[in-house]
Amino acid sequence: MHTEKVDTIIIGGGLSGIYAASLLAAKKKNFILLEARSRVGGRILTREHQGFFADLGPSWYWPMINPKVNALIQALGLKGYPQFEKGLGRFQTKNGHAETVAGYPMDPPGWRLAGGMISLVKGLCARVPKDAIRLNHPVCEIQRLDTGVRVIVGRLDQEPTCRLKASRVILALPPRLAARSILFTPDLSCNLTQAMLRASTWMAGQAKFFALYDKAEWRKIGLSGQGFSLCGPLGEIHDGSGEADRPYGLTGFVGIPALRRKNKDSMIQAILSQLPLLYGEGAGQPVDVYYQDWAREEFTATEYDRRSAHNHPEFQPPSGKTSIWDDSFHFAGTETADELGGYLEGALSSADRAVR
Image (cartoon, rainbow, N blue to C red; front, side, top):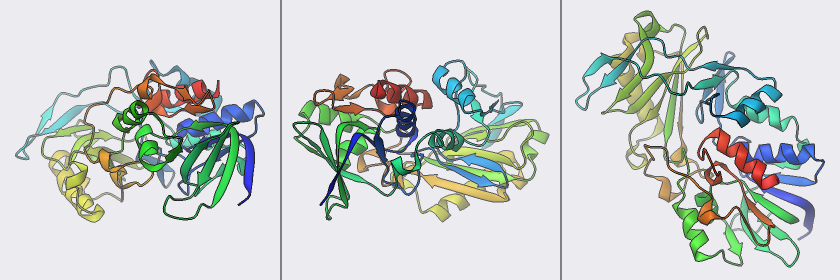
């Protein structure tokens, strides 16, 4: 099989990989980005409904502590708006009883992005040569050579679809997913492999829900849309729209562990039965709904991610390493960030480090 040659191969088309691609493109470098899915964005997933953008992956950024995200938003000509938090919150006890409570404003304040988080990815893709991004290209093997690295595209149980050789590789995948799905030749050290497998993949065990409405009835009765539940199925809920958005949205995280989640239709029905208990009868009659279970995503989660991380994990570069194989192999991705791992800021900073 013919082996294509390129200077740099980026593996993974999430925010970190796309940002790395844009940085290399600005430097006029020769590279190829390989993405296993049929779309770019990775865990950034946004659905559009009549001009409204519903985020089913990362939803917030924090202007006070996210300088790289702020700079990128400005450079791309995008705009953000503060998370809607005016009014009281709702709390649901283990037995299903719902009560009104004081709200819990984010500190520092969280913001959403007009056009959804996918607008970051779209803006970066516009800076990258179209032929540099290759979709439906899952990587199954990475081989160290005397000079450079060889990357095999395909699945481990099938014949490879193509081979590429590069001077260097940027691995912009969650470490756990990479350790579980890619064969490394020679073997990575035991300590590094174990560190990669132990690194939680943020969002991988989560499921998110988004309901759209013509009217924000919860606002009319003094509610912010924020809610917490000890019985579920949604454990955390927020108003997912701006001050004057049309339509309006309620969005939240499913609190039921991945192993206990039923099929999509059953989960949606259970959520639509829960929302009226918190926000009134109209909350059970949205104009549209979206549901995304990240634990069922082949190119996000592994079997180790079935237990959701209810608190934000502490991330760090795997085994303290950001580059291996004599600097021909570089880690990127938010889970490998030196700071703010698991956030969009960490995705950008890790990509910047890998490119440098």
